[in-house]
Image (cartoon, rainbow, N blue to C red):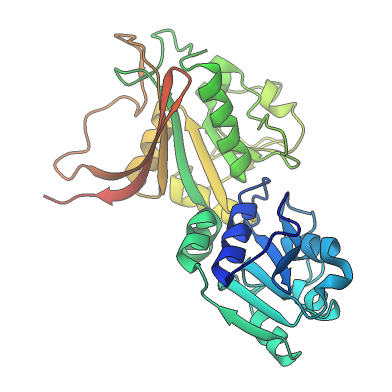
Length: 353
């Protein structure tokens, strides 16, 4: 962070810096938050929430500001929390530091941590909200959408050929895309609180399902769907640091968690109850199809490789099309990563004709 001492000419500049800072780190399942503290027109402190269990953005910024926080204005992308969890409430830290004003972009929709603005105002701190709210919301859309929908934000990710295949006819799939695309996929893993695959993906590829990116402190929860206990429990995914949730709907086992069914809605409810706010669905084709068809998807990230298999596993699994209603998507971003294309879509849902 190199903004210390930077001159701030208007409030929007400070909030824009806070939003930029919020994009650092991998805080899932917590929100992305950035904070900039300004005193007499100069940046004296700045911070972001790097990982769950680490210091919140306001605390990092206050520590950097030190005594210069007294009488200053704190610009925060999300309403300061009024909650004691792994860390203490940021409202208390801000008032004890002598901050005179707090400007935040987006209200906290989480009832457990909300109410910070009222607490600050009662303590005599000037409080205002909404500055660059749309921009701050977009930067924190995953967590905010999850809070509003009451379920994890769901991203479907697939590496596919130009003819829509995710594997050769024998089921093998390493490697469809290049190194740069695989690095981007690891960023997505670090961005989400959990990764989900079906049993066949484990049986064929034996992946680790870890986020191998600098800055990832907490590995995402690994979720494996295995209704008929096809896996042994000795596969690579079960040996990695962090937690693996092995889900089935039959055949009890000491290492497995049984659900009444493994439909997307049931799975998401279970994960939400476990504190999971975002989920990356990585495969295989049948699992991806089930989630897309359920309507419980928020974004699709497709890594398109300049290759043709001619045959093999389709990325949306076997079966006929959905019918006349179809599925509508909105293209949000196209980025070239090495030889591949990274296409990001917003899921709009089924379209009636």
